[in-house]
Image 1 (tube, helix red, strand yellow):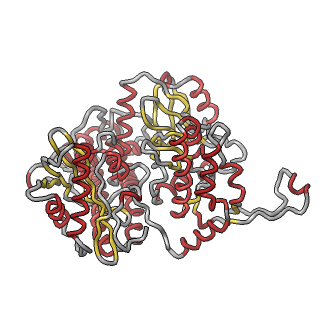
Image 2 (tube, rainbow, N blue to C red):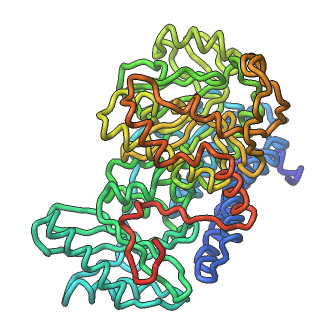
Image 3 (cartoon, rainbow, N blue to C red):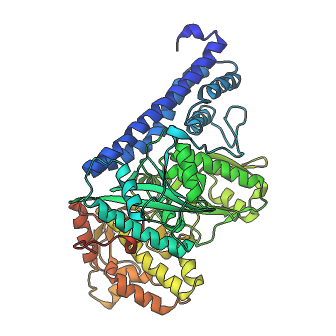
Length: 588
């Protein structure tokens, strides 16, 4: 900054406002540039480049915030009235962004800078751009709208052909007419079953394509009278050209596509809030924070979650209590019954046999953040310096937090200050689900648990702990992993066969009689701790062993490691296999 401006308060205020604004513009410009490349990566099947872009994009917001903070603090620190100067700069910034199409994201960037500059604890109305009330999700009209509406003038197949052809992919279709007929047949069957007729007022399709992994998703909604339901068309690459893989026509099916267990989309549009608003109309149970996060704006997703939490606290009376499930050895986990999120705080000391460190745990969560979650790992959001009224905590929980997590949780007057925590969407702990649900549901969850372990392994993830207490069941019935303190890469494990004992005394020893190196895993031991308690029907465990018995053999894991080394990886589709279109010659 020019030193001549230091004696000019207005010039300083303008400079600070401009510095934050310029930092935001650099962030969003680079974000958009990376997102723009997704279409080319899909058309050229540049999957490795797509993965690298996903990792690079995750780091943009934090990196640019830190750069901006470093720039500003040098100027702000010598000023006698730092907060007054900041308030004036905030007003200028607010005016600067008032007409931007990404107003919500630019506010979040400002607050991220503010909280670091002033090391904010809790909420600081004096310097933040704070609003815990309702906010708009605008709808554009005319040429600026992201929505194109289609009506049926002939048959459904002709309409679907027009829709598919309108996206103008730079890759040829394998058989556009056949795909249009497949989508149309399933669409008509759905309308007859769900709405009792084939009538439609229209199909609203978002113009931007949603890219993720090896798929391109065309997202829209069906409308008839007062009814709305999603329509999502996944497009994949094949040796013959583009193929429609399926069509998703229910809220449940489409909701999984935007799940908190999936990586973020690449979707290009200048007004992200319009996309969020559209998705919200077709997925009303999906929170605003989850939708923003699914679109790649995870920092604003955190802001939306933060606002929703404080709105909930202002309009409820329940207390923070321990979350259901087996108490963790390295974390205290608590929740609000009225808020579908769990809060995870790292303990000061870890219960035996855990042998880890606070930094190692944070590194595990960082691994999950950067890795493809393949629908099997819960997204975790990291927060710092939160503050809550002490009387909102169950006394026993507060006592536990202050005694077992004193490095992270402290009491300041009537406020509980939490310097660091993770939030995750609440799921039903699998160990409780198996005991409390019907036999049919318990068996389905048990079998999906085995499938989840295999999916994680195929994605090069070793959970570390395979206990049912570390997995949960989503509202859609999917089993997911959520306890990350021992997570690692499967490629770093060594799967071994248990050596044969030489004597009865060897077998009776409390410690192994053979050498064990870091990374050694003995799959033959898995049934000892994976089997279900007596309260679960024994036939469920027998069925699990029949379907997933290869999990207990070193050969299964070693062969999987060989496929990983060859990059021979399976596809992870965000919808059930049974929904995929079957074509002659297509492998099952």
